[in-house]
Image (cartoon, rainbow, N blue to C red; front, side, top):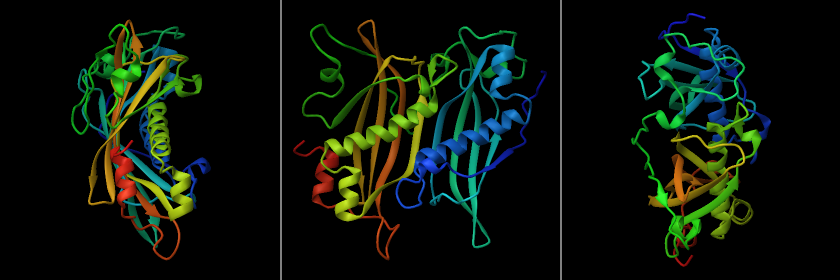
Length: 321
């Protein structure tokens, strides 16, 4: 292969997976991310650089290392989506950037349902079947490990490594009593990994979805309860997930979720930080942020934003928690 990095876009056409239609026929934000990923993969495949070709010829794994999305409209299970990825200029230590746009057709009009930015890196994989040098055009965004990339601080809080003092535990360090931090620790399963080894970007997207669910349940406003009692369902307007270092199959990821601010009583901002414990230090492996709210799922106003009351505000901000 002797490819060049051109500026032409590529488009993937498909539908969201049925798995994502959890409440009525609306699709959750995770499946927007999956369609974004397909657009990026299509760009590489159109140039003969699909993940299989890169792995088997050069021993590198194609990895999304940063995604930032805004969701201006809903997606439903029968929508046909056009997902278009347009590359930027690769920069050493920063990866290959893309802008991605997802659209659907409704009533004869093109409706944008996602606008996003993505960065991609090629990561050398251990035990790969071949390791021929990558083509020169790909070399600027090829790295030995994710930690070689320079993290972007735009829009997220980039956590630092944290020492765990002797006699302390992870919970004491990451979610001290009196804070609004919520901690969830989980083992990396093989089906969240790429190339027999590393936790992939979409694994962190799943973790973000799950830590929100666990946080809401712990605060007494679980998704099921709010749906049953009020007809409220969670909705996402923006999300960001950025990898900072490699995490490996069967390691334990300590995920901290913190609500930061309530906006106009209809949305809240929150951040996620993920760590693994190595040699007495909590090493950050990913960070993220999310803009969350609730929509009405029943009645003539279905789809409209719900307004938080005192109970919801107190739960989200940890008052009395």
